[in-house]
Image 1 (cartoon, rainbow, N blue to C red):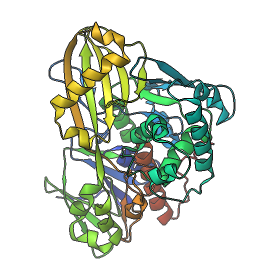
Image 2: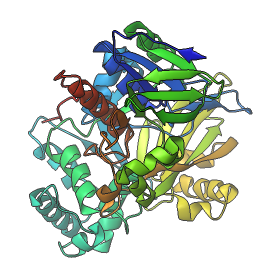
Image 3: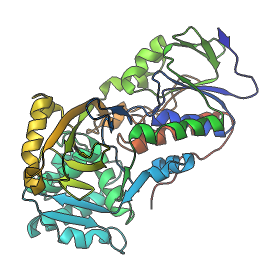
Image 4: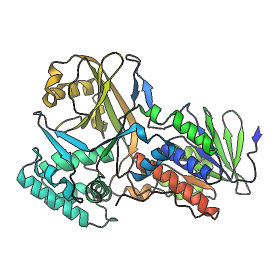
Length: 455
């Protein structure tokens, strides 16, 4: 069956319903294109998704997703659709050591980076020598050029940072933000994290936490918004082949034998699938072949249900621990108190198996939260996203392609493309906007889709 979708408007097929594909599809449709969004699953959101826990009936996220105020494009995306109210701003960060002591990080009414001076000076987990070293290191990091890159551990060693400074400050921030082992982290994206979060704006560090499951956040409202803009959505249809026709137009063959003709294709699937999806066409652009140089890292979530609360804090950074963050997810309908411990870059840990991970986390928690000893663990579940993100390692940009390819009418969208950001939801949305900009530009439309960075 050959589907004709009209000749008056340019036709773009977006393959993949993750955040990158959603951003590209909605933007192109709003600017006059006929857009068909193809998603092989029965829902949108990509890796930002949830599933039903069979034991509790709770809808639980595959992993806790966190944004920050500096994520201007993700924030714009959510507000434009009308789902911004599902994300709660958290102006405080709580850092806790295994002795149960807590330090509050909260900005005050001073320009960045002075807004954090009071919290930093009062941090109980750093001594004065370390605070001096860290202040010096942060200042020197700010002075490096944005394009510089090198193994970040080497840079730290050469800029007055002790091992304890790394373990107590640099590593907790970067492993969580970049999902990359410290020995692989590159200077370029380490600088990006610290400059954007601590230096540019006094509110940039503030967390944004979803108050609903991810499949609810990226669910019916998003679908409704896409349809209102004119996007045609195909759920449950996998793309079988993508063909480049002789007149530089495209045809997309679905697994139900339907063929969709298009002027442009936006491939918004995980980078591991791009070459296979395109088949022989992929060889026409060497940048697609370079994707094999990207390496992925897992993120593990330990879901815990207790018979009583173990803390009244909404979230906690856990220092000197296997778990890096604990998030309170509230009380469910069964009266159980639900928490999630997140472990980024968990490849080595997973070698021992999920049962061992659960036991290790449960053995560590009583030191952080005394009430764990009084509580009964009703149930625990370990979930690992094995290829959660690509690693932001030294030299990684060599393997990240632009959104525009060397093949006419073919565009890429995904956090792995050149967005200026590491692998984040912000990066995914940025890639969708950038792909849309390039498509509209080729039609002679100068449209600024990407939102400005926080200043």
